[in-house]
Image 1: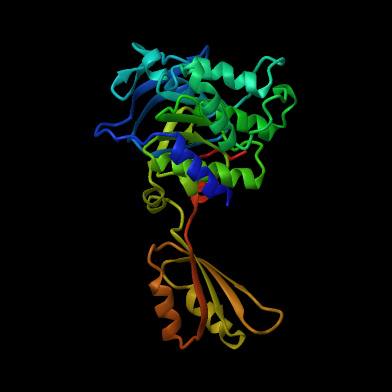
Image 2: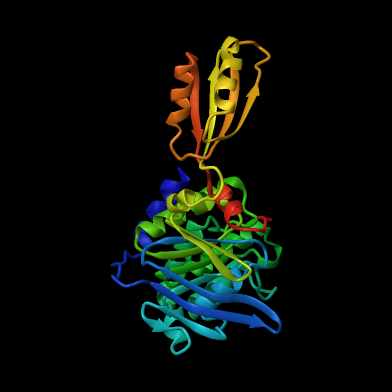
Length: 337
């Protein structure tokens, strides 16, 4: 129910965008260091308008530095970033007028309440005084903060601080959203609502870059993924292409067979070319035994053919396709934390 309400509010509040033919963002050979620490190193990336890009990497990989440079809050030491054809070095203020940035950490003067906080950022976004009450009211409704305008921001929970950060980011109806860990601290229901919100905003033509350690959320909402490690781009593309490019086994197959035929099935598959590993798990109830197979081949029909040739009755066969977490661990040396 809440997701339908979010879609209605977005449809009535935000405009739809005509997608340009050129890339929304071009990042060309960007390098950024802090003293002896190289945060981003020779980074290249193109982001199409209307796409939702998930940026993932281990802690300290350079994600936040890259997002800050895209948002014109930091300048590259070398290289070039253009947004809608505008150079981020030459005209940062022109870019900021159409960009909404949500930082990973919450910072605000302690004396402000939610209403004052939103009024401040509405003014900064250039929203006319007469239009601010409606704009702020709609966005507070969208982020489930309506009716809390008098609450001091210092006393907010982590989840509600994230909601407030997202609320101020949407002020001014930006066509490019840069979000650093937007779901951090949110409960499962709020995470679902954020996903619904981002999907709807994307469907309206907005370009979204989102960094998150919650890979299942990114897999659900993103049209593309970029993996960064030690400041370098190690992989980029849609999830299907990244999955096909994995160095590890392409498929994991789960089989159920009759206990009386489990030994035959195991022997048939254990030495079968293309099978990296085969494990047999006996069912204590005696109804069916389970086999788990790691396959080097993308197409697992050869497993089915081998069992049929051995006259094994297959009760169930299911392929487990690698998810974004599998892709991440395949491409990087680090860990999600």
